[in-house]
Image 1 (cartoon, one colour):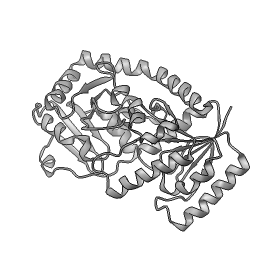
Image 2 (cartoon, rainbow, N blue to C red; image 1 turned 90 degrees about the vertical axis):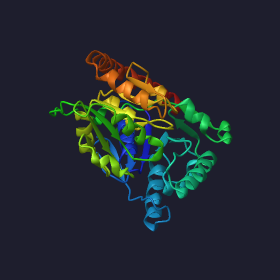
Image 3 (cartoon, rainbow, N blue to C red; image 1 turned 120 degrees about the vertical axis):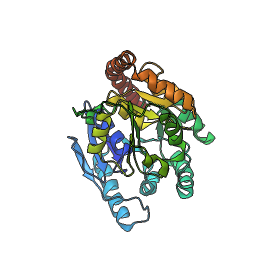
Length: 342
């Protein structure tokens, strides 16, 4: 049994879901101290610190001092940080002498991110290289995209965590139409316009599209009665409802590293139509738990939707998704334990 400190200060959305899911799995045979700036329902030792995004906020330094004191007192076997958080960079030099690990979800930031965020990302990667002892990524593709100087660093590849623990598959009366879900932040690289162009060519009475997430949306989409738009941050409860009432999750990305949305979709037993980009093919296997399409291919999107509309094809893929879940969790735990030991 390991004494693990797990840190995550991204308090909403995919990073929180990822962290809660990973800690839930680790709780089975480890002593966990879960350190966050939010509350969760997980039954483990908790430390809530008021650490915020602005790295120079005075209260952050007081909270980091508390964290350092606790590390000295508890002397954990492993200190695992989920994704880079600006304020934590001040703690990195101290962690150099510890068994410190960080999960990097994206080696290269996506199109549409701010200039400031891109600059910070590059600086932070270099600080991670200097001070954090081990790096976790979710695919060989992401590892290959890390800066060349990371070749001297211990980089471990582990699969995406199983999100099933927080999934509540709600029994809600579904729309009679075959319902497609585009979920998550709306950025240029996610290719929403290609899904829209494909969707316009489908029979209006047979299909519905739900677009849910923050970001800029083409005003033309509001003119379609069979398109439901939720253009804001979506709460966990609302997310559960959306995945429950949808039939398929569509990720028509132009580029990507990996996708938490795809992992959440599979947790809800929903097939995924996704572009064959980045590490997505390592999670979505064509004609097994979803369908892979060419980026920017309107024809492929239409063809995939119609394929899954067939009840026999749909049932077969749902069966595959359900059978694969337990095996995936075992694989994740084995590889994470290996990374912790290295």
